[in-house]
Image (cartoon, rainbow, N blue to C red; front, side):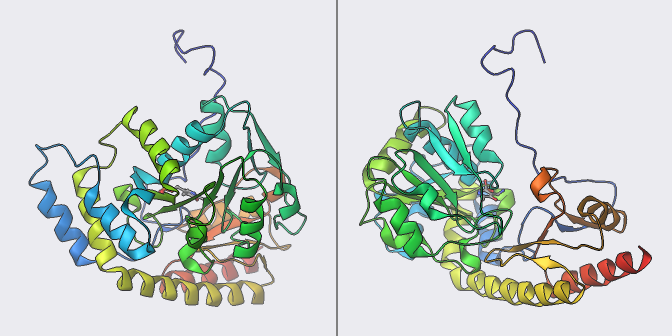
Length: 353
Ligand code: PMP
């Protein structure tokens, strides 16, 4: 750290992204990416726009917002797009939370929430999950705080019902409720259907998982026009060109090919069910996932040991050191072939132990 880093920020603990080792070719099941390549229309759009990189991108992101409005049945000005959904989460924290409206989120959830809170110096409370890793919605009813819930939650994969989400939103009319639906396309129900009913609901999604565009960085939020206008005030005060022209065009092309991506999600769901069954046959306890990953542990092997043994054999999964979840590993669902290799390798490791 330099001597110039401000007093306010010197204790900031940054987010740790999933590892991307370059020493060998791994089966990558550690960052919840899609195993499927983008559709041809997306690559063509990127190539086409790459010929125009001398020009700034469209600050209104018209192409992709138009398509999002069409797919989700909302108005153009109910949508904002950003550089990954991480960016819109950060904007939403900046816009809607402060000392008077502090943040509230589960103690086991997406690791960026406390980082954004600290970066923006917003007080926050982490609510313990129940012992079965589910959310007790009573903890979020009428709390007078800015609530943030990942639905499905990460890294557990467990989803709340739309009825429960609505109860939380309805009971906090004076605060924004942010529902982070990064994994919603893998089996949970989206709260987008509620945005015209509640002016305090902001739904955040991403192209990184179900639409195979993690490397392009495209996220979005849908909500009441005024919420979106506030987020645009933040966006135009930081970086109006936050989405580059290749990503804007790629996002629009992906939505025109939406059926291809939704079919891929069905395949991932099938592969997930296959993987859950096989892990259970090997004696694993697996939480009920509605995401493109599963969270699993076995009494036969320590969580970190399994992660390291898999890594030695060329398979990367995500292990967290936090005590209450350190026996688990979060395993991204890939192709059936990748999952077969994973199960084969785990069986071997268990035998050798
Ligand atoms: N929310 C959750 C719950 C996530 O797991 C992630 C991915 N790490 C994100 C948001 C951010 O994804 P992205 O910035 O790639 O859209």
